[in-house]
Length: 151
Image (cartoon, rainbow, N blue to C red; front, side, top):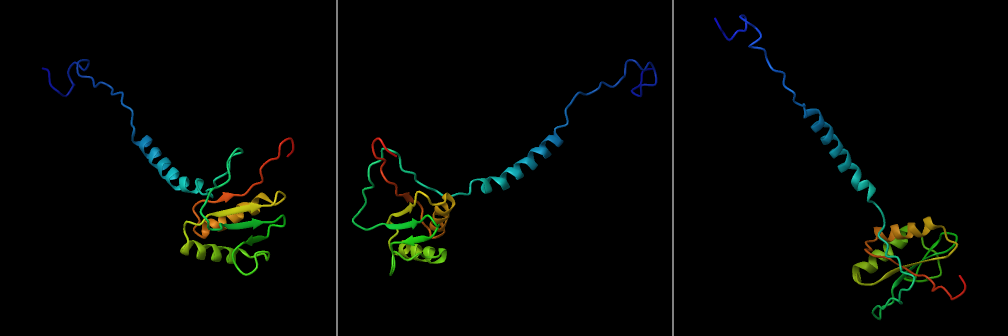
């Protein structure tokens, strides 16, 4: 009397244990991590594109047009060589408006930043952020060539 109910001999019809890993919780964790990385990745890449000159770089050869030069003095004031008085400091809104107007008419014109050696680094970076807001893709930095044997 062998039947499929297991009421007879019992030893012959035991169920085998299955050794499987349940991967559904791992998939849930991976999806949560994916969402976290997708949200935080754009926040980590925010910044200002700057083309830094190399030590042995040759002077920039441009066209005959005079580049736009933004100057940051040691007090953190901004100056621009475009406008009525290039020796008069301008505020951030004026700087953005003037550079944006020039870039609309002459997008190939170079934009350079010149900072005093005692100027706060944050002020120079602030000028580059303002230039980025004005639509400037690449910014050059004006430096002085190091003299031999000195600074």
